[in-house]
Amino acid sequence: MELEEFRRRGKELIDWIADYWQRIEEFPVLARAAPGELRAALPAAPPEEPEPFAAVMADVERLILPGITHWQSPGFFAYFPANVSPPSVLGELLAAGLGVQGMLWATSPACTELETHVLDWLVGLLGLPERFLSTGAGGGVIQDTASSATLCALLAARARAGGPAPDLVVYGSDQAHSSLAKAARIAGFAAERLRLLPAGAGGRLEPAALAAALAADRAAGLRPCFLGATVGTTSSHAVDPVRELGHLAREHGVWLHVDAAHAGTAALCEEFRWLHDGLELADSYCFNPHKWMFTNFDCDCFWVADREPLLAALSILPEYLRNPATESGAVIDYRDWQVPLGRRFRALKLWFVLRCFGARGLRAAVRRHVALAREFAGWVREDPAWELAAEPPLNLVCFRHRGGDERNQRILEAVNTAGRVFLTHTRLDDRFTLRLSVGQTHTERRHVELAWRELRAAAAVVG
Ligand SMILES: *Cc1c(COP(=O)(O)O)cnc(C)c1O
Image (tube, rainbow, N blue to C red; front, side):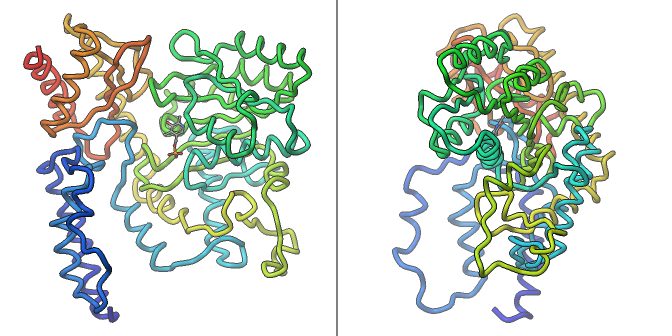
């Protein structure tokens, strides 16, 4: 593709994306593709001769779109959102065009410094503890995902405890994200060194349960190492009591990592800062702008209060990467803050989003989503056929029809098959529970109303 064609096709592609967003409500939110359908339609081998770009785009329409679940549809209420916005997509495109590899400060100084700067900005914007600022002993880094952040936190915790050892123990609740168990497995912790304590009332990790587990392990000659607490669990948005857990962690020399992958964005607004009560006791923290902060996947922001253990765990300097800036000690080399060596210029899209929305724009969007979720919860509360499974603290509503598990399951299937909205489920109190997660960039009141209408209509039909 010559440069002139790139200019033309690029402009057409931006138009295509804008048109897609405009017509997105015409598509069923959940893809209707059958397993193997796309592969059967694709040629067995790649083309020998170059094909015109128009032919590729024709196949995007014909073959790819039917296999897309439309995460950017305002009728998307499933899982947690992965919302995007025009500035974020433009930032992503620019990062691709610059095509830099930001593994070292020296391999693209702006890539490192913009990242450090934007993460320091976010400490202020979210009201996070100042210990996370890069100007002190700590600092922030962009990871691909919260899963990677948890793994890095665990590796740092283990380094602080003196390195791998069979007597180190990892703690969390059974409501913690599965990435905690996965991190422990990857890091080589034996299954019997992972304590996923049964959550108490409202899905929260009880400090008393943790205290008992810590005491029992100490008595057995084991060394408590790492606690993964959650602010906004994936299942029901439960918020662990970080302050009390933090005091226990301090007392036992345990590294406290706080995972606020989805809910963390809410702290943009003063009235939701209670979420982070006690966070100054945490050794590390992460949240995902790629969930609820209008920044396309992937972008997880991860902070540590003390960067030394992280660097001790992950820093390796081979001869071929030696350079004067690194030797001077005056720069950050983010390859030492993550598992892979190479890294993308992710700060660019985040910077675009922060500047084009402004803090005010971001706060307004968060408040709108929370208000819509609360309104929906009100409708559920007022309808005698339905009930809330938990009071929604933010923008996730867990609820169910009073007709039992099977009825709820059939309601969910009917609604998702109709395709105007898409919801998913969880199990709470051992009952099938529907989740309405309000966080898509363009979700308005009419879409939440549509979801409620669809649900009630389905309940009538499935009987
Ligand atoms: C979504 C989620 C994760 C996993 O996020 P990734 O960025 O996909 O790894 C982890 N923790 C919580 C609480 C989540 O909601």
